[in-house]
Image (tube, rainbow, N blue to C red; front, side, top):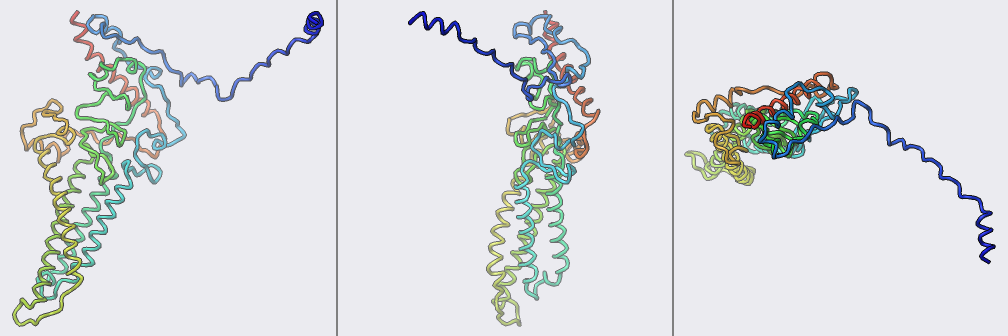
Length: 383
C-alpha cells in the first residue's frame, strides 16, 4: 500500500506556478512634484542648550521643494480648493461665514420685526396725536434705521474678518518639536507663524488677525477686518430698538388716553384693538432685545477703551501684543481708524491659483525659518 501511494505521488504533475499579479491602477507612483522631501533632523530637548542646535537649521531661503507638500490645481478656482469652513456663492465672489443658516435667521427676525412695527404702530396712531402730524418723519426714521441695520448685518456677515490664508506645510517646520512650535506661535493647521493677537478660530477653521469672537447671529467670525462693521451693526440694533420701543409705548399710551376721553371736548372713543393687543407684545420683545444688545454694546465699548478683544479679556490677557494700552483715546483711535490693519489677504476666490499663491507659501516658510533662528539664537550663544 505504501509503495502504491509513493508511486502515485511520484507520477503526479507538480502544481502550476502562481501567476504574477498585475500592478493595481490605484497604486501609481507618486509624481516627483508631489513627493515628500526628506525630513530635517529633529533637535532633541537636550540639544537646545548646546551651540550646535542653531546650526541644525541654517539661515537660508526655502526652496519650493522644501516649502510645499501640496500643489494647487490651476484648473479649479481658489474657492473650490479652500480648506476653511466658509461658504462661497456666485462662483466664489461672495463669501459668508460657516453658519449661513444662523445669519438667515437673524435677517428674518430683523425684517419681520420692522415689518410688524410698520404695519401695526404708525398706521394706528390716534389722529389727534402729535405723532400723526409728523407721520413722514416717523416713516423716514423707521426706514433709515431699518436700512442701516440690514446693511450692517449683511456687510458683517459677508466681509473678510481678517483671515490669514492657509499655507502649504513645510517639512522643515513640521520636523520641529512641539515645544519649539509653541514658542514660535506656530499654527499647525494653517502652517503659519501667527502674528500678535491672532487666533485660530475653531468654527471657521482659519487663523484670524486680532480675533475677537465668533458671532452666532452674523454666522461669521469677528476680527480685524469686520470689527467696525460689527460695532455698527449692534449700535444700529440698539438705536432701532430704542426708536421702536419709544414710539410703540407712546402710541399705546395715546390710544389709552383717547379711548377714555382724556382730551377735553372729545367724547369717549373706541379703542384700537390692534394697538391694545399688539403693542404690549411688541414692547416685551423690544425690551428683551434692548437689554441683551445694550449689554453687548456697552461691553464692547468697555473693551475698546481698555484696548482688549473679547478673546483676550476671557483669557485674562492684560497687555496684548506687548503694547501700552493705558490711553482710552489711543485705544479708540486704533479701532475706529483701523490703524495698523493690513487689509484683506485673500486673493480673488473666483480665479484659479497662480504664481502668487506659491510665492506666498515660500514667504510663509521663510518667515517660519526666520522665527526659528530668533528662537534658537540665545540658546546657541549660551554655550
